[in-house]
Each structure stands twice: as structure tokens, then as C-alpha cells.
Length: 289
Image (tube, rainbow, N blue to C red):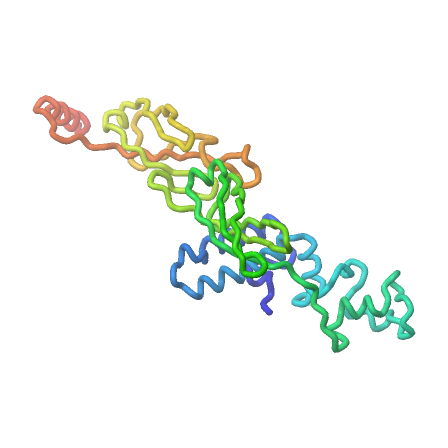
């Protein structure tokens, strides 16, 4: 079994934000929707998702740190019992151990593999599915209906809530009951107007050449409507102007938003009149002196 920390690419003492950041980066890189037909990417995505599910849960991470690959075979005794130390503390007369009310049976339940017995606790039925959402849906949050298979092969539809701020690589866990756990792997479809960089957005806006030179005001479309943007004089092609708080909401912190960067694209005039050409010639002469 692979080391979950190595799968994510973080040290054992990594903080929760460090693990989450590294996972999101890897999830975007190997997401099946972004690597269609790539079996290696699909396998990697499943590996990092499995590792993240354990390391992102404080209780499971603690068990994993104590027991390694056998973490899910330990049923609640890790905090009171150190694996490998029970030989000196376990009493062979079937009485209680030195660690409280743990009987011989309790110890075998927790560490059956060490004594030739293997008792694996039952695990909930896990269903993993991919969901695509648009950028506007990722901005405001949305509800989606998905079909899941119930006991006996029957299928049923349930409605799931996608919170604001999700991005490609986000994972949502839902427990609809009946011992089921649903893992939703989110991918956000590309947008024709905006490019997303984490919680920031970038949009390109064409403006008349004279506005780029002299400055002016333009209407800019955001995800919530139009805003008036002041363009400074002598703005260069590709120059970006920041609209604070007009980006994507931060996942689980919808009141915190990224920024929208407006990239200026001056448009060169066509079909100039003789008078307009004369003015350009005069400008050229003046700048050459």
C-alpha cells in the first residue's frame, strides 16, 4: 500500500491547508475530464483522492499516523493503545489489560492481523461520480440531481447541493443514508469570457485606441452584471486593471471573494478618412522630433 503522504507529495508534519493546497493542484492535473482516455491520469486521480480522504479527516489521519496501512482495521482504540507495545501489557489470563477496560477480546478485535485473526470493520458503500458545473453555477452555488444505485440494484435520484466557490478538483462528500457515502468530483467547464485562476478571474476587453491613449470609462461584464471601469491614460496592450472583490467566492467562505482582472486590448482603427490619416501623420511627426 502506498504512503498517503508520498501520494499527495507532502511531509508527515504538513498542515491541513498545505495538504489541501497540494491535493487541489494534483486533482486539477490528473482529473479524468481534463485527461480523457488517459488511464494513468485516472489511476493517479483515484490514488490522490483516496489519500486526501484519509489525511483531510483529523481522526483518520491520527489513526493512519499510528498504524499506517492498517489504520482502517483499528476500531477506536488508537488513542489509548500503542501498536506493538501490547505484548508487555497484555495479560494472558483473559483479564483486563493495564490500559483500562480492554479485554483480550477487545485487543484481538483491534489487532487481529497480529494474532492470525483478521476482523475488518464494515465500511459504508461508497459511490464516486463526476459532476460538471458552469462557472456561474460555481459562483453562486447550485443544486444537481444525480442517480445512485440503492440496495438490490434499484436506482434512485437524489438532489445534491454544490456550494459556491467549487473548482475543478474540488471533492464533496454526501451521506444520503443507508450506509452510503457519495463522493462528488467537481469539474468546472471553461467559460467563453472569463479565465479562472484559483479565486481570481481574468477577462479581456477591447477598447478604442483613443481611449487607451487618452483614458476613459468602459462597461465591463462581471458574473453579477456590468460595472463601470475607469481606464487610465496611456494604457498599454495587455495591461490589467483590478476590480477588487469581483472574482470567485472562496470555497466555504462565500463572503470572501477573489478579484477580476480586466486585460486591456486597444483596437486599431480601420478605414481612416483623409483627415484622420493626416492627424496620425502629424502625431508621428511630433513624436519623431
